[in-house]
Amino acid sequence: MAEVTPIVRRKLRDGRIITRQGRGFSLNELKAAGITLDLAKKLGIRIDKRRRSKREENVEALKKLLEKAS
Image (cartoon, rainbow, N blue to C red; front, side, top):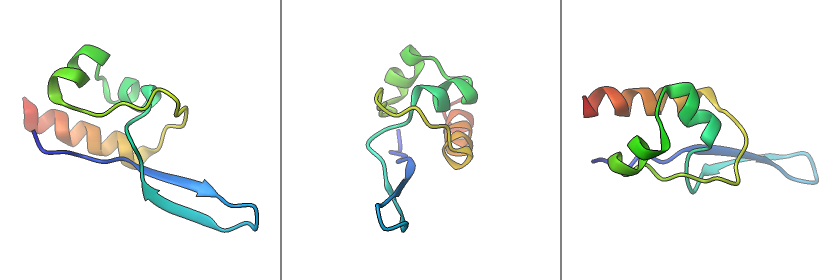
């Protein structure tokens, strides 16, 4: 399965916002896309349990990945 990486934004102390690739998708993003933990592991989707945010770009990427897998 093709590797999809999430997009993460972080605010620095001086007010700048950095956009970078994340380590994995958050549990909230998986839930919004309708993917369970077991299915995510079977599909090879990386999970970052420390993240709590839910970014719509990441949810859409997960939905596209789920459509390709079906």
